Image (cartoon, rainbow, N blue to C red; front, top):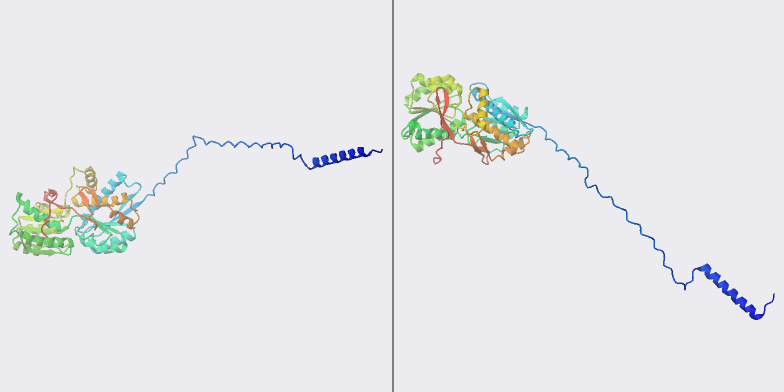
Length: 435
């Protein structure tokens, strides 16, 4: 077919237009078209959190572990045989205190086991007993009695690093110079003060005139405690005007005193003081009776009370003897007192004396250290906790410890009546102004 020139140009233009439309369709949308906003993708809703159960199941608490039971092995070197065997009664006093503490429940699971060792009132036996208790029995604390024995034990206790404690050693320097040594007891020098004060203020109802009073004594040799009393006696004589007219000595376990009593009788004393701790005192009293020595006053500084051998040996001749001893305790003022008396009497067959009371109180000091948290198996811990005990109320009253580990109380005065030890003055003041 043949088209004319005009029609041919129209067809070509149309063909060109169609070609362009096809090309645009192939390349994309019309750039001049009104844009259509994209469809927004919806944001997913947040996941719902699980709310905690308002009443959660309780978790049982972890139980507090029970403390391991501990045993304090408490040693005690004390005569249990020989002429001083009667002092073994102090074991019963300490055991009564231990029973009281156990019954109170204050120690929890801790208990105290008392381990007595017979010292035979001998220094060498006392030292070997201390070594055995510390190294064989593993006792971190050892109680003791008698000045000579305690002073011999003192350096050994420091060497072994074991606590040494006494409720009966009257030497006021015993506890000093060693962190391992403690004491609650009468000061021996105060025995002299107490006896002279009694003569001065109480004897005969209104006291004796000390000026010119004739005084004699017989003492056991080798006893440091007694020697301190003698030294104090001379000081008081110089200050108060009485005269010491005879001074005699003997050895422990002596049985004959005729020579000494003959010399004392010749001096014509008004007062005779017996310085002994054992049965020797009874033998001396018998010798005085046999020789007709009858002073106005027969007195004893610290060794009479509780000395049943004295009564057994001297019998009625011992009646009237005036003695100093640790201060008396008030049996009505402390609820523990009747329990102690019953406990002690059940073991010994008689009431406790003041020495027994002091050892009861000393045991309470040891128990107090345990209450303060001491490790019962450690001597160092026991030492440190005993040192923390500032004061304690015992049956004998208030004990106040100084920085040297020493506590003391004034002595009392008693006398022998029908073979019994009877209190005269519960506590008596020393001559504090005489040095």
